[in-house]
Amino acid sequence: MPRIVLATLNAKYIHASLGLRYLLANMDLHGGPGLRAQTQLREFVIQQRPMQIVEELLALNPDVIGLGIYIWNVVETTQVVRLLKTLRPGIKIVLGGPEVSFETGEQEICRLADHVVTGWGDVSFPKLCRALLDGPQPLMKIIAGEQPALEALALPYGEYAAEDLAKRLLYVEASRGCPFKCEFCLSSLDKTAWAFDLDVFMAEMETLYQRGARNFKFVDRTFNLKVENSVRILQFFLDRMAPDLFVHFEVVPDSLPDRLKVLIAQFPAGSLQFEVGIQSFNPEVQQRISRKQDNARTADNLRWLVNESQAHVHADLIFGLPGETLESFAEGFDRLYELAPHEIQFGILKRLRGTPITRHTAEFAMAYDPQTPYTILQNSTIDFVTMQRINRFARYWEMLANSGRFAKALQLLLEPGSAFGHFLHFSDWLWASTAKIHEFAPEKLVDLLFEHLTNLRGLADAEVRSALLSDYLASGARGRPHCLADVLGATRSVAPLRAGRQGAERQGRHVNQQSGLHDDAVHHRNAIQKAAAAA
Image 1 (tube, rainbow, N blue to C red):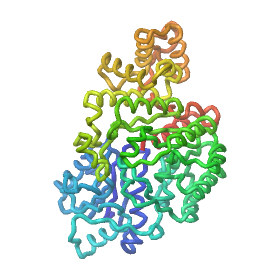
Image 2: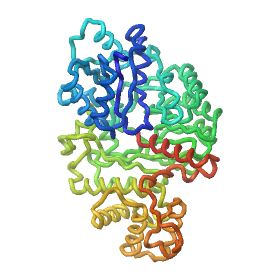
Image 3: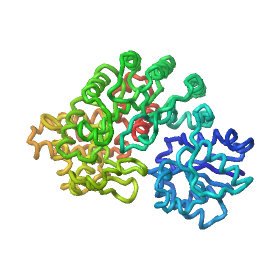
Image 4: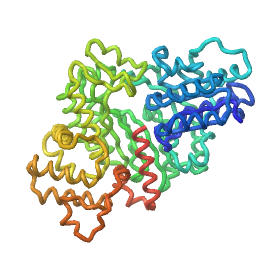
């Protein structure tokens, strides 16, 4: 039976915790020989009942439980800790992770726990566990994590099990930290970016690949910051290209030198995904939040990625930044839409604990939800009512635009004129008509789009029906929306498409015909791509 259990609640099973595996890999190196053998990793998902999680943890009868705390799991994990302390108060509970690295005195979960390791835990957690097991007992509850040189850390990739390699998205990092100071991001607190020894890292990637790993998400905040390293990593995956290979990177949008373009252009469709953080095209807002971005170069690079490569491009915008108005955001959204990334990830500003965005709270009357995920509720330029409208816009955008199921109908909906304006009008109408933001059957969405485009936008029935029919057939749906009943034919199966399949092909539909993957592999890859984009 393990004396130490490392656990966390992931958002979904498909995500595999990199942080816990770092701790596991460093138990012997920084906690002393034999500690790794006494430690077990357990991963749960936030959908599980806290009582079930507690039952499984207590069945292991550990002396110490270390829990990884993040913005997406702090509510559920607080209940887990509450139950653990009620049932077995003698078990030492140690917390770590970004959500408990700041403002510890304000959080119930920190009050319930025995110890909290803030910041990096790779060295400090193993040392703390050794002290808890063998003494002397630590005097401090809040322990500032040591930040060692990267070469002092054992890498975690050997801790990925065969099941992880086969079924889950693997998180890897060639560097830590970020040199940029965007105030909404925790990485703005880093002094710089630190690169792992590239030879050592690439050897680890080779081992993972030889073991069968094919789904890699690089968590580096600035993958293309050091071009020499980026070139070598891209070439590594090009040299090992396989039909089921998938690699995800987050890139600096205004820096894409020709050396990278040459390699990016060689990746086949479905194998490469880029997350491009735009956040805002408003120069005043960018300066206010300490974000450096050349908007013209950013637009050129996005245009090149979309038109000259087969990479899937996922571009991020944030609504609610201090000083951003509805009108200025709409201009930026329309500019991004015209660049045609495959997805626009429409995010609402969140006040992450510890981030410098709080320095604008008074000047811009920034009011945030006190509950996770601490979303902005209103500010001096966006009132609460408008913020709620935009929250619904974001939900509907994900459901319609990013699902990939309505390509032709979406073009009718968003053009000509302002794409943002058209979709906001649709969003307001959809809410007024249904009072729902989720649980729409796919067939119902088709009928709602038909009603809006014909009755409110005044488009011709035949044109709209043709676009919706094309989209519906391409999606593989087997139901029969009312507006398409005649053209689909009376003999077709009327079994409705399960709503859970709505986004199954969202990112891979435009490439899977070229990949040679069978249906199960296609669905798995699409789930991986979706998880990489959302994580």
